[in-house]
Length: 335
Image (tube, rainbow, N blue to C red; front, side):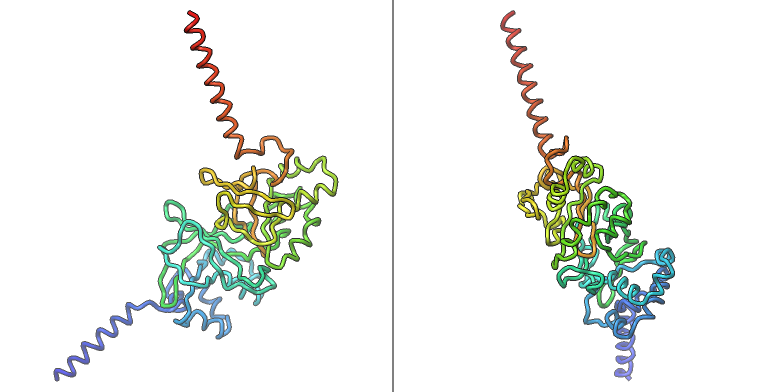
């Protein structure tokens, strides 16, 4: 009798423990009312793909678009099997990232590594995940996310094989530089000349970094240039490997196709040479774009030397104050 009672108690505790244990990613999604559409879409995948999300030996983080986010996506997009599969892969991160493990700036490698969609020398595409001082988490994924990053809703949900973060936007796979600039609608002057460097960008086997200048600044810089000098100017904007903002350090020397530039960081602002980076880490299919206030390496745009101009201004003001003090003492002793 005592043994039977022991078995009953043991079974009770086992059932309680099982009830409290995290489920795998697939089963956890099924339990979330805001993820029913995503649950349906994933159910259409192959058994092999679904097994990735159910295998407890895997370590995965899923950024899961809620029902409202998926409803905003075009029907044609959802009906294209390969596009849908690769988009889901772009929401899957290799590794288990809890809330506490995410810092202010994170570069997370995704499952998206098809060469049709990514050209980074065999490496997968990334997500840029940021956390602000109020602990709000944003996910940046390309040109369309510059002014409207995907936002994480609530806290991460722990599963038996990773974490789920519910987000309010479907993450679009980063496009080529040309397509990204067209989508933005903000760089018509630069687009006129992109054909001069397109072959270099497309044939860079390991990916690229582009320092994209403000479009008005670019137009002002090249207005009196001949074709040869325009090409030289464009070469100053290209590095034949991806360098994300988090890879840059104060005093670092970087080599573009046309010049060597020095990175400086002042009060949290990053400068390439004498022009500051205004928007960072815009992902493209084969690298990353950093928008700069002026043209990197240019020497004919008035006011571009922002990193040094403030120091020059301080020096002028100091000299002026010293002169005024000297004049005051001269007048005082004359009296």
